[in-house]
Length: 610
Image (tube, rainbow, N blue to C red; front, side, top):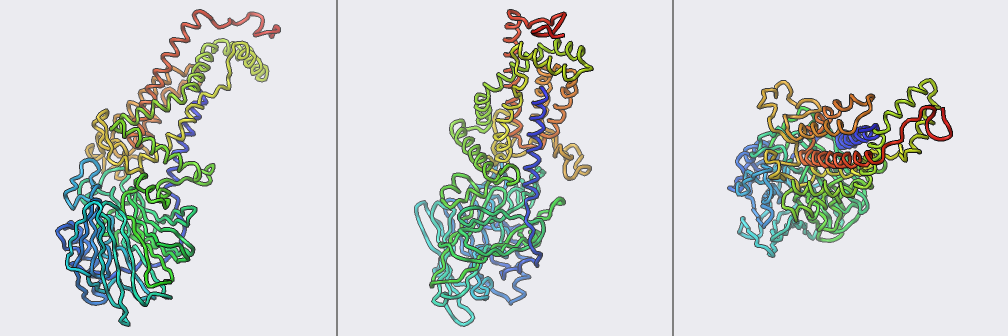
C-alpha cells in the first residue's frame, strides 16, 4: 500500500465522517416558540380490538388532559382496512388516530404481522392525530363528527374504492363535512372538506400527530433496541415544484413558511406521511417541532439528543365549497415514491451543498445504487449474493486501472534497491536525487504518477452511497443472507456479542466511542485481510508502521458501520488480495526473463550521470 493508497483511505474515511456530520447537524435555526396545543380527544377513542393495549393506555393519559379543557366529548372509531393499511378515524374531530402498516412490523427480522401490536403505526400521537381542521380560527378537532352510515369496520378488496363521510356543524350552524377516500391496494388516502360557507374563508388542514419512529423497537412496542441507530431523527420536507427543503430541529421550535407548495411531509427513518393539496396556490405552512416524549403514545429515552416530532399545518384561502387534499402514509420505498410522480423520492437522499455541490450529484448516485441493488436482488433473491455481485461488478469496472496501478507498484518495489543507492549517493543534494530517480523511472518505463489510489477513488462514490443506502433504504430493512447467517440485518452494524452480554453496558451506556455496541466478526476478518494485503504491497521501510496501524484503524471504524457495507469491503479486499497474488506471480516470471537493468558503477542512466 503506497502513500497514494493511504491518502485514499484517509479521504474515504474523512468523507464518511463529513456526511455523518452533515446528517447530524443539518438543522435550521427557527425562532423559539411554545409547543403546539394538544388537540381535543377522548380517552376511549382507541378502544378497539385492533389497537394495542399498551398504546391505548398511553394515549388515555394525554386525552384525559385534553377533554378536561372543553368537557367530555364521546365518539367511536371507524376502522378502514385495505391490503396495505388499517386506518382508524375518530368521530371526535373526524381525525385519523391510527395508521398501521400491514406489511411492516417493529421487529425487523421476523415480524408477526398478524399481531396488531407488531404492525408499525405511523400516527405517533393519537391525541393529536391527523386530518386536523381549522376554519377561520374555529378548531374542529374537539367537535363530534357524525358518521354517514352505520358500518364502523370496513374491509376493502383489491380494486375496490370507498369513501367515509363525517359531518359536524360550525358555531353558527353551518354544515361541515369531511370525506376520506380509500382504494383497495394503496397507501393513498383522499381527504376533502365540504361546506357551503367555505368560499373566502381561511382553511387550515394539518397533520399534528407526527410520525412514529419504527426503529426504536425490537420486537415489541416500547422495548428499546441496542442498535446504533436507536433513534433516527425525524424530518420535515417542503416541495415547491423544483426543490425540496429539508428541515430538522434539535429542540422544540417552530417556523412558518409562505409560498406555493406541492406538498409538505414528515419522515422517520423508513416511513413518510405527506399532505398534498389538489392545487398549488399561496399558502402558509406552519411547522412545529415538539418534544415527542410529551405527546407521542410511546416514550423513548435518548441521552444523546432530544426526541423531536413534528406537527404540520397548511393554511389557504378557500375559493369554492370544496377543499381537496390527499394523504400519502406509507414506506419510503423508492419505486413506490416514484410511482406517484410528484417527486416524493427527493426526501430519501440529500447531500451537502458546500461539499462540491453534493446536493446535486450525490442523491442520484444513491438512487442509482439502490436501484442497482434492487435489480440485482430481484435476480439473486439474497442481498448477500447481491452485494457480492455488486462488488465483482465494481472490480471489473476498475480492473484496468487497478491492474495498471498494481503493475506500477510492483515495478517500483523491484526498483527499490536502485532508489536506495541513489538516495544514499545524493543524500546531500535533494534536487539532484530527484532528477536521478526520475531519469531512472524513464529508463525503466515506470510512471511514478500512476495513481494507485484512482481505482479506490472510483469506488468511493459507490462506497459512500452504499453506506447511506444501507442505513436509509427500507428495501434493505431486515435484509439478511445465508452467507453470514449470524448477521440478522445487513442494514445495521453486526453485533455478535453485545456490550450487555459482556456486562459492559453500564460502563459504556452509549457504546464504546467509535467502536460501537458490541463485538463483530466481519470487521475482524476485514482487518486481517487488510493486514495481509499490506504485507504484500508495503515494502518501503518508512511505511512499515502502516502494515499494523491500518488494520486496527479499519477494524475500529468499520465495526460500527452497516454489516452490508463491511461485507462489501471485506469481499472487495479478498478480491484485491487474489488479484495482487496473481499479478505478483506473473511479474516474477516476467522479471526472471527480463530482469531490471542493474545499477551502473560509474553513473546512473544515460549520458554518464555521476
